Length: 169
Image (cartoon, rainbow, N blue to C red; front, side, top):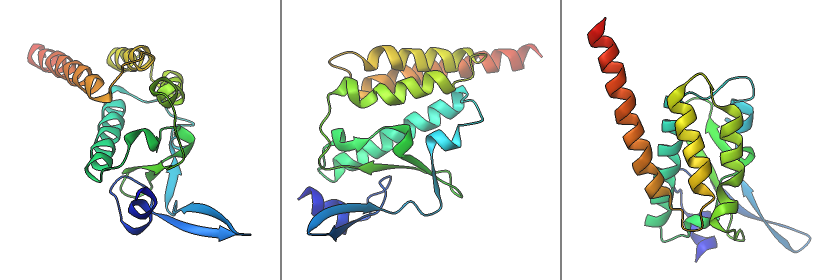
Protein backbone atom coordinates (compact mmCIF):
# COMPACT_ATOMS: atom_id res chain seq x y z
CA UNK A 1 0.00 0.00 0.00
CA UNK A 2 2.64 2.53 1.08
CA UNK A 3 4.87 2.00 -1.93
CA UNK A 4 1.95 2.33 -4.36
CA UNK A 5 0.73 5.48 -2.59
CA UNK A 6 4.06 7.30 -2.82
CA UNK A 7 4.99 6.14 -6.33
CA UNK A 8 1.59 6.49 -8.02
CA UNK A 9 0.39 9.73 -6.43
CA UNK A 10 1.63 13.28 -6.21
CA UNK A 11 1.44 14.00 -2.49
CA UNK A 12 1.83 17.71 -1.67
CA UNK A 13 4.98 18.31 0.35
CA UNK A 14 6.62 15.02 -0.56
CA UNK A 15 9.20 14.65 -3.30
CA UNK A 16 7.94 12.73 -6.31
CA UNK A 17 9.15 9.16 -6.08
CA UNK A 18 9.61 6.37 -8.63
CA UNK A 19 10.69 2.75 -8.30
CA UNK A 20 13.93 1.82 -10.02
CA UNK A 21 15.63 -1.55 -10.32
CA UNK A 22 19.34 -2.18 -10.63
CA UNK A 23 20.75 -5.72 -10.56
CA UNK A 24 17.40 -7.04 -9.33
CA UNK A 25 17.47 -4.66 -6.38
CA UNK A 26 14.66 -2.18 -5.88
CA UNK A 27 15.52 1.48 -5.25
CA UNK A 28 13.41 4.57 -4.78
CA UNK A 29 14.39 7.59 -6.86
CA UNK A 30 13.27 11.03 -5.71
CA UNK A 31 12.98 14.02 -8.02
CA UNK A 32 15.02 16.93 -6.59
CA UNK A 33 15.01 19.03 -9.77
CA UNK A 34 15.08 22.78 -8.99
CA UNK A 35 15.34 22.13 -5.26
CA UNK A 36 18.05 22.62 -2.66
CA UNK A 37 18.46 21.06 0.75
CA UNK A 38 17.84 23.03 3.93
CA UNK A 39 21.47 22.71 4.97
CA UNK A 40 22.53 24.28 1.65
CA UNK A 41 19.79 26.95 1.87
CA UNK A 42 20.95 28.03 5.33
CA UNK A 43 24.68 27.45 4.96
CA UNK A 44 25.45 31.18 4.93
CA UNK A 45 22.38 32.71 6.57
CA UNK A 46 20.63 32.52 9.90
CA UNK A 47 17.05 31.53 10.61
CA UNK A 48 14.89 34.21 12.20
CA UNK A 49 11.65 33.68 14.07
CA UNK A 50 9.45 34.03 10.97
CA UNK A 51 11.69 31.60 9.03
CA UNK A 52 11.20 29.06 11.82
CA UNK A 53 7.44 29.60 11.94
CA UNK A 54 7.23 29.07 8.17
CA UNK A 55 9.38 25.94 8.39
CA UNK A 56 7.39 24.43 11.25
CA UNK A 57 4.04 25.21 9.60
CA UNK A 58 5.32 23.57 6.41
CA UNK A 59 6.36 20.44 8.29
CA UNK A 60 2.99 20.41 10.04
CA UNK A 61 1.13 20.71 6.71
CA UNK A 62 3.19 17.89 5.24
CA UNK A 63 2.41 15.68 8.24
CA UNK A 64 -1.31 16.40 7.94
CA UNK A 65 -1.25 15.65 4.22
CA UNK A 66 0.63 12.39 4.75
CA UNK A 67 -1.91 11.48 7.42
CA UNK A 68 -4.76 12.22 4.97
CA UNK A 69 -3.20 9.69 2.57
CA UNK A 70 -3.26 7.14 5.42
CA UNK A 71 0.54 7.02 5.55
CA UNK A 72 2.68 6.89 8.69
CA UNK A 73 4.13 10.34 9.49
CA UNK A 74 7.10 8.68 11.21
CA UNK A 75 8.39 7.73 7.77
CA UNK A 76 8.92 11.38 6.76
CA UNK A 77 12.65 12.06 6.62
CA UNK A 78 13.30 15.15 8.80
CA UNK A 79 17.05 15.37 8.32
CA UNK A 80 17.89 18.87 6.91
CA UNK A 81 20.22 17.19 4.40
CA UNK A 82 17.15 15.47 2.93
CA UNK A 83 14.59 18.26 3.27
CA UNK A 84 14.29 20.40 0.16
CA UNK A 85 13.08 23.87 -0.73
CA UNK A 86 11.90 24.61 -4.24
CA UNK A 87 14.17 27.31 -5.67
CA UNK A 88 11.29 29.31 -7.17
CA UNK A 89 8.31 28.78 -4.85
CA UNK A 90 10.29 28.30 -1.59
CA UNK A 91 7.91 25.39 -0.84
CA UNK A 92 9.27 22.72 1.50
CA UNK A 93 9.47 19.08 0.35
CA UNK A 94 10.41 16.01 2.33
CA UNK A 95 11.37 12.47 1.45
CA UNK A 96 8.99 9.70 2.47
CA UNK A 97 11.01 6.62 3.28
CA UNK A 98 8.85 3.47 3.68
CA UNK A 99 11.63 1.48 5.38
CA UNK A 100 12.42 4.22 7.89
CA UNK A 101 11.47 3.37 11.45
CA UNK A 102 12.72 5.68 14.18
CA UNK A 103 11.63 6.71 17.63
CA UNK A 104 10.23 10.20 18.00
CA UNK A 105 13.36 11.43 19.75
CA UNK A 106 15.63 10.28 16.97
CA UNK A 107 13.30 11.58 14.27
CA UNK A 108 13.62 15.17 15.38
CA UNK A 109 17.20 15.08 16.72
CA UNK A 110 19.00 16.15 13.54
CA UNK A 111 16.43 18.84 12.79
CA UNK A 112 16.55 20.31 16.30
CA UNK A 113 20.37 20.26 16.36
CA UNK A 114 20.44 21.93 12.94
CA UNK A 115 18.02 24.66 14.02
CA UNK A 116 19.97 25.46 17.19
CA UNK A 117 23.07 25.92 15.08
CA UNK A 118 21.36 28.04 12.40
CA UNK A 119 19.11 30.40 14.39
CA UNK A 120 19.79 34.09 14.72
CA UNK A 121 20.77 34.26 18.40
CA UNK A 122 19.92 37.97 18.46
CA UNK A 123 16.27 37.13 17.74
CA UNK A 124 14.75 36.34 21.15
CA UNK A 125 11.65 34.65 19.74
CA UNK A 126 13.71 32.48 17.37
CA UNK A 127 15.85 31.41 20.32
CA UNK A 128 12.79 30.64 22.50
CA UNK A 129 11.11 28.67 19.75
CA UNK A 130 14.12 26.62 18.70
CA UNK A 131 15.21 25.82 22.27
CA UNK A 132 11.68 24.81 23.21
CA UNK A 133 11.50 22.57 20.14
CA UNK A 134 14.88 21.05 21.06
CA UNK A 135 13.78 20.42 24.64
CA UNK A 136 10.34 18.93 24.05
CA UNK A 137 11.31 16.93 20.97
CA UNK A 138 13.53 14.85 23.27
CA UNK A 139 10.54 13.77 25.36
CA UNK A 140 9.10 10.28 24.89
CA UNK A 141 5.57 11.47 24.22
CA UNK A 142 6.34 14.48 22.04
CA UNK A 143 3.77 15.32 19.39
CA UNK A 144 4.32 17.89 16.70
CA UNK A 145 0.77 19.18 17.20
CA UNK A 146 1.54 20.13 20.82
CA UNK A 147 4.61 22.02 19.65
CA UNK A 148 2.54 23.92 17.06
CA UNK A 149 0.33 25.14 19.92
CA UNK A 150 3.39 26.54 21.71
CA UNK A 151 4.61 28.14 18.48
CA UNK A 152 1.28 29.85 17.91
CA UNK A 153 1.39 31.32 21.43
CA UNK A 154 4.92 32.57 20.78
CA UNK A 155 3.71 34.08 17.49
CA UNK A 156 0.94 35.96 19.32
CA UNK A 157 3.43 37.28 21.88
CA UNK A 158 5.75 38.44 19.08
CA UNK A 159 2.88 40.14 17.26
CA UNK A 160 1.73 41.90 20.45
CA UNK A 161 5.27 43.18 21.05
CA UNK A 162 5.50 44.42 17.47
CA UNK A 163 2.16 46.20 17.78
CA UNK A 164 3.22 47.77 21.09
CA UNK A 165 6.44 49.06 19.53
CA UNK A 166 4.45 50.41 16.58
CA UNK A 167 1.96 52.13 18.89
CA UNK A 168 4.77 53.76 20.93
CA UNK A 169 6.47 55.11 17.82
